[in-house]
Image 1 (cartoon, rainbow, N blue to C red):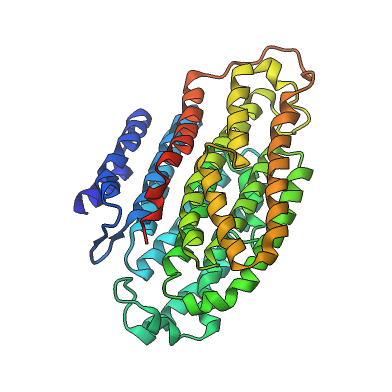
Image 2 (cartoon, rainbow, N blue to C red):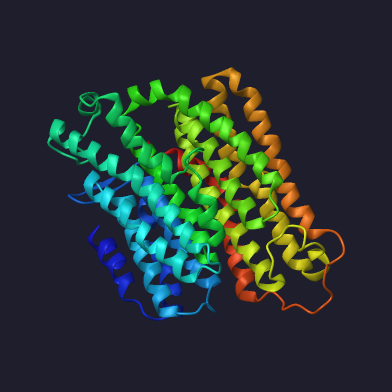
Length: 438
């Protein structure tokens, strides 16, 4: 535990871009022993590591390494590197804290480097508005979360996960537990609290979009999954409302995806659609739903991060994100279109990706919860396949708008895309790994 902490803290003192990237690719080896013993847990005064924590920490480190690999030509390298490593350090504390107050501090501290990444390296003037949306949406829900933690401490005299149990949460009223959940629903985000997400994604640089989609959205899911054992009676009474809003929001955001002309906004709204399915499965409180949520978090993190990278590669060469003005890309970048096709099919949960197994487990849990959800789930599956096919076919086919020569895709960019795709399609062989954390 001490070795892991010291190695994580040492990230803040790395100055070289290449050394940082290499160190981040090798860093997950520190956590590999616990994967061999999936039922093991490590608990100390400040840290609590189980399979869910380790999996999300490895995902954070891996996506951060791919983020540095994808953005080596960015301006202000040193400042960008420091912010990225600071963000990674806060994520490590969030996923491994054993105290709710330490988790709250790291949970909210993540907003600061994210806001700086969007506001300093965003391309459009609207980036400041997007950053304000991010801050006000998250902080408006986090202050009630802090107050509810104070009430919980008053009732239980402790905020350590190891000492908390259901009886302490039963001493709280339904109102305070709802405020506690609200902070996670905004960060996830749930439909109706999602308006900050498309704005932040569209205005963020490629690195900001990758880290937002792959990791920051998982903080909300991690918090809900971690608290689900303690708030079961409240979540059971909330399940009808949350599942209904999530499924309805999934249908609406899928329709919004089909109507989008901005490729980056389309991928951002598709994240809301996937998170609505994850939230529905989690609040069914079933084993398939809760365990399938973790695998959905991993698969969505890898797939959406790769899609944002692909959209940025298009934008850097065509200087537009319009889905119509980038047509004919198959004639310009034939090899890149292979990866565009593979990741678009992964986004629609085609085999052999992790998304397939994750969506099957979530669909089973929601259908088992109520058979009336069959039609909404059918619509979500059909519409998600529709916008994924639209995302691939519209830029790919047709005659290119311009005949001027465009720069080719570099081997570094191909490597970054491949490293997203490889674990996304290999991990389905070992999906039982994600079913051992409870």
